[in-house]
Length: 96
Image (tube, rainbow, N blue to C red; front, top):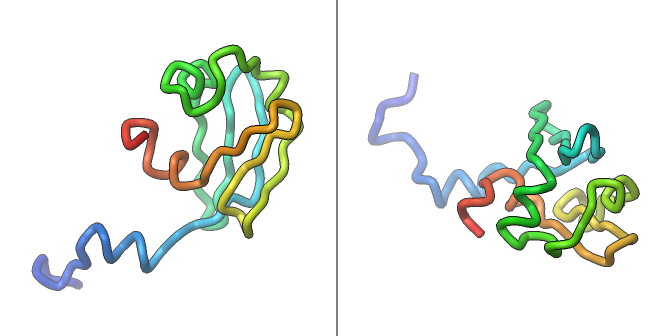
């Protein structure tokens, strides 16, 4: 077991582990991303537009065609020519 003072700081954790996205899909107006460590993160497309992560007029059907780029660090949506960095999905929209 690790003692509290032995726990890595948040900035060290970011350097140690950066999970990559291995799959992305859109289902029921949600963007669902699967990470290499087994986690699956979903968020409503409406939040991505509300928080201006993607353009305000983006529709879920425009995100269905996507490509994983940068060794799993970016999801690229060719239909709208926009990219979504993995860290925004993992850390949450509040960090935007």
